[in-house]
Length: 159
Image (cartoon, rainbow, N blue to C red):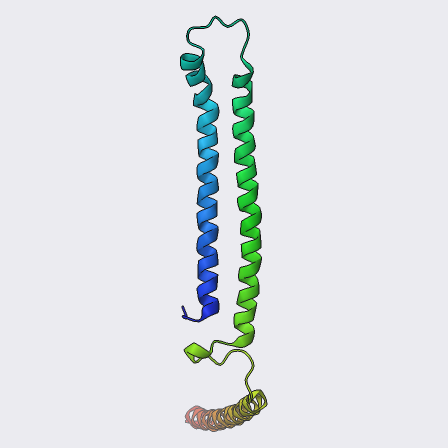
């Protein structure tokens, strides 16, 4: 890959997207652990000496808050990654439009585009002419060979 500034920006944006995605996955995992483990830990240590006649509100709020945090972080990462993806697409279009001068690529626009097209047209025309000549040369020997084989067959059949 090239070392142009736009290529570097694209690589950095993609790395940031991967980091945010990994963080979102870790937050979702932590929320699932909190939903599964935290209520039992709270009952065991916070409400250990108390006699409970109904479920405490804190135990009801733990799963809701954990799920809310995980959902918020996931949506934040998703929207951020979509924005970064659109920025990467914009940079890639910009790279394609500018051409890659640092690598010697002839993509994009240059001052002699018209000359390049004319050279291609000339080369194409020369190749078509050579192809036509080769096809004519191939047809001619085949006809002579076919006539010779007919003549030798007719001579053999007469004997």
